[in-house]
Length: 280
Image 1 (cartoon, rainbow, N blue to C red):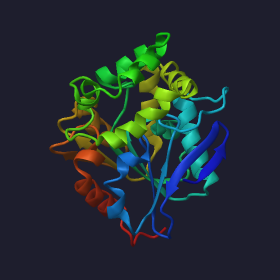
Image 2: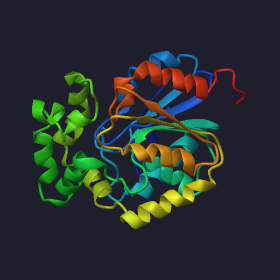
Image 3: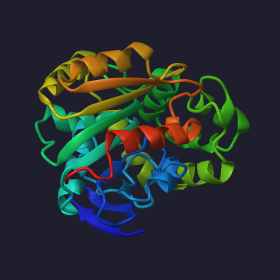
């Protein structure tokens, strides 16, 4: 994969290239761009860019002094868009919702449209029981190392309250092996995860950040899974109502990872929301 040097460190990414409308697809904690592997083939006429954010599945650690807080990572997304000179981007989030802070900070000038797919929102950081367990592990000496040692177990990957709540359909073991390997093998990668997990704002601070997003007046599509175990169903409605040009679509037969559970539907929704013939 190509790499680009940003202020926090080296970020790798996948880029389909081409002259079509630009979609930047973001992933969640201890995942990488392969979470979109079922979606990308249906977007052949678009330029699809998938950075590997420093959220635990990145292959090389960030600088020791890198700001990997919620705000720091959101600004890093903005820096990534600028470094690749991407304009009028459709920014697509799933699971991790932190890039919404770009809107709160008034730094979304390169974002033409926003798609929020079953992601963290309002005060739901980190989300649900799995998120709380990661936060607890980050605060406990050796906690993240212990958690990563368990990552190969079936109970960890498909158990209720663990990764089994991420998708209704099992993610292939080979894919999950690659997601968990960096944090399992590298103390520096675990350090990066801990920096993020230990720096989340208070619930009041998170709600304030959400309220400041109202100023984003460009089109927003909210795609929410009705059966989601981690992202409250009411958050989808609240997000759509928060934005002046927001629209909600609820999805059947899916948990948080809609790109895993309902990829064909998600492709159709993206193509409707960002027509290939759109003026760029």
